[in-house]
Image 1 (spheres, rainbow, N blue to C red):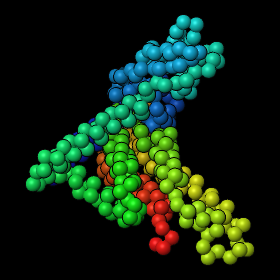
Image 2: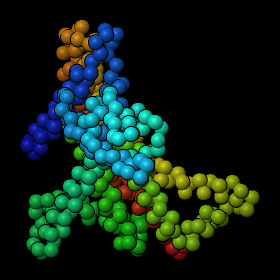
Image 3: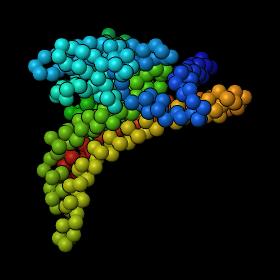
Image 4: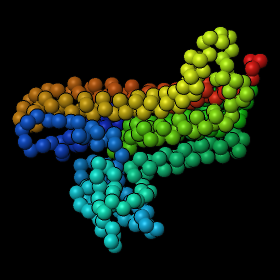
Length: 340
């Protein structure tokens, strides 16, 4: 137990140091007070390079399709977005975190951004841990141990208490999707808490796609009773049907919207809070003019960061649970039989 606590403290301190490096290296030269907003927004946004600490960044491949041909180069060619890249008669530049062609030619951006690279990494981790657990079952050992002993109760909990109890008799058909969603969100939530990591589940595009998967599955799997309920809600007086039918139809689209916003908002808020607490050190020091005030605030900020970090670990599991639970509930409402 002590080792676990020590690991959490060390990890949170690394996050704090990483955040301090981000703010320290970007302080403005003019003495008009420190503004943490650009650094916080840069952290939660996607980028074409993987920033680790200080001036250390990993360039990522930029893949652009324009006029029937591909242009492939590394993001380091942009020199942090301040220069242009020339490929033949095409000139590319970055405007508002998007790559555009200088002559306004239409391009298709297939680049490997920081979030995409992080999702690839999380997918490899997901395949590794679940594949290893699956191989352990094939060997038919008497008692699970190691990684299997940790994942087995988690898998059983998701399958029995979330999927089976909410979807009903047809739960096996949707178990693979819901289990995959749960572990995908969980792994990306936890990776997002490590220093220099990407904010994948805090990206609304990612949460939008996840919610759309649920929406498509609900729409395809819904039985006649589900659609009948939309057209004529049971027990509703005829006079109220003109009001209830639009509300029911509107509810079909609010379900994936709620899934998308809930995950995005909670994960993004956690990142913003942690970096805002770190920025208090620089706000108090007034860009280095009052070092004593900065050092006075630092211990309090670090303690609050540690506290929020521990809460974020809980939120990482909680948001994966909530997304999977609501998806299972929505699917269950669409596939349940009328006599139920």
